[in-house]
Amino acid sequence: MHTNYYFLRQLAPALTERLRGCRVAVCFTQEKDELVVGLTDGSKEFWLKAQLGATFPALALPETFQRARSNSVDLFPGLLGEQVEGVAAWPQDRVLQVNFRSGARLVFKLYGPRPNAIFRTAAEAPAQLFQQKLLADADLKPQAAPAPVAAGKLPPPLADLPLRYLRTQGYDQAPPETKSRLVNQVLAQLEKPAHYYLIQLDGRTRLSLLPLGDILETLPGDDPIGALRRFVPMALGRRALEMETKQLRQLLERRADEASTAAAHARQRLHALAHEAGYRHTADLIMAHLHAIPARAEQIEVLDFYTNQPRTIKLKPNEKPQLTAENLYRKGKNQQIEERQLTERIARREAEALTAMERLEELDTQPQLAELRGLRAWRKLHGLDPAPTAAKAATELPFKVFEDRGFTILVGRNAANNDLLTQKYAHKDDLWLHAKDVTGSHVVIRQRAGQTVPEPVIEHAAQLAGWYSRRQHDTLCPVTVTPKKYVRKPKGALPGQVVVERERVVLVKPGNPFERE
Image (tube, rainbow, N blue to C red; front, top):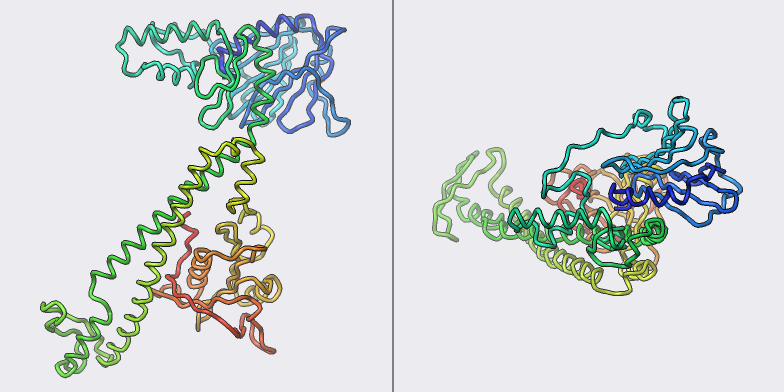
């Protein structure tokens, strides 16, 4: 509530008492989205530092401030020498206005996504804006006095904290007369707060006029300047911890959700394979009834000796039934491999989901994670360090770039680009992948020192190798996986042609797993 009307209306008279008669000595910026105004009465100085970034707009009131010798730019030259008459909060708004005896005024608009500072001279010259892209702020004016709020109703500028406080007092289920009493009690506390509270709520450090959430400090309600001086440095100091904790939580929740969803899909596919007539089953029926199949038949009606039910089997009129059965036996072998891989995938993805949920629980319960140093050490211990973004890598590398669990996957775009990737960019210990026996992109998983590439990363890279190859539409695609040191280019070979001296083959369904994320 440090930018809410109910706090600003307490801050304005306190600032008026401190600043009346003071003159503006300096006005400058030396950090992005920061405006610094220094005032003095001849013997003492007072500093206003406006944080005008969209993520955390605030008025900081440091007791001292040291201007940098470089990268500092003077602003609002007409403000220099102006003498303060008073400070006022705009009615029912998040705006604080400093009025000067000449009639000039400096307005601090503290709206969450669009904060700004606006300076107007007494001569009503065009407004000067700190954030010059917000052109509409040049015409910003106080709103007309709001209509009176009906008894027991919540006024619009109440913000979220008072409403949440009311709900802790049983507001939602209370009868109308009790609701009215609770609202009036809260409004009385906001009009004249006994204390200011520095709280932590939903992972954020906030200034509140009501006791709510985890109370970090309780400050006197008659000193809004002191409360602001205590709150802003604390909030800025804790901001990195809160942001990194939030990012970690989102990462772990996403991993748990993705792993659970992947396990469920694999389980569905495994169930379907177990309950449908398999390729080997169909091939056995064809071979058993080979003598009864007429030439160029498109289908046959047979008795299925596995189920003792009649069954229709489609055939290819231009293909001998023996060849059809042979192809089905081969597909049956692949189906067995797929079932085994699905079983392994289910176990692996369920384990990943469980691990992510355990990490989330640790994030909420381990005391050392309440400090930035402890959080970063824990993150590094569990391999949760942020990796360079794929977008940044894509601007630096001439390949398709994907990120998976901190590993970078590079995909060649054409034959010449494949050569560049394999011969120039790939390290000998990087993993190299390619769809087997067809043309396609070279795929490289960059090695990370001291870390083994996880199987899910290899699986995703193999899916990419299948997707960017002639096997894109196959049900299953065999993919070569080998360290790059076993890949060489023979003398005189065409662009993209290589020889693999040692390999293992994985079977995957071609696709781009990153398009779903």
